[in-house]
Length: 159
Length: 192
Image 1: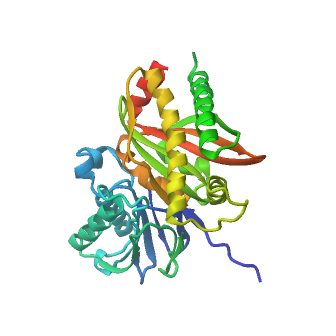
Image 2: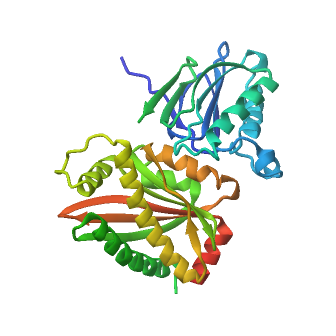
Image 3: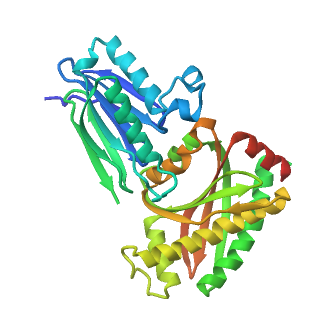
């Protein structure tokens, strides 16, 4: 019996990918960046964000106007919600997971990873989206894979 | 003079300075070669150097004439070899880094990055100062993310240089990265 090929889609830094029913969305070597997965389990619609910075407003007031990508947590969540809803999902049925947000150099005066996580939690709460899982913080790199068919997020930690 | 030619000249001078400094630190004849300089957008660095390789990064913030970050990145095996050499241990003795080893590697990073920045500083005829070294280990891509993130909003550019250390018939390879805002890269290249 022929084996069905699963589509593997990389989500590079500052980008987001949304898919319905199929595909494994992945990113290798995640450090201070934050991977946010959003999933609608009944319709099997999923999105994965690879955000680099916590807030578009703090870092660049005009970012949301001229940066259509997923560089910032807040505007990336807005873009992902728009795309996911366009595929038929209702935001009240969405479940979110967070992966990453490490502080690789143990910098005490600047912890972008932690700020990314705090920003995502605040944004998800504001949008009324349930946060159901996380693998965050520390000073470790992570590889993450998100199956859109099942909603399962697999995280590998490397030291 | 073309940018590549200018950068090759910087590499040549930095190689000489680093060779002298590292030979003194290790107590043996050492060769340091900087080569293949590439200037690229910060988000393209990770695919360029291979994000999944396990390694160690020594990071130094840069201030003064230009503001940016510098990073010496090398494979995990190289970190063990360097520690063996510097601690006068037999090859392949160290298999895991302890805090003292990390301190030693920070010093190596400080010497390499500091000398490279000193050459740039001389060319700029302005002072470039570097901060305290910080060390991280893990996948190249994960180490890079934190350094890159601070510059993500500006679409900053990185100078990526290959580095080869040759000590006692052993060759160790890694990368030296300098990240600056785009306008500062122009200032830098014009000054060279």
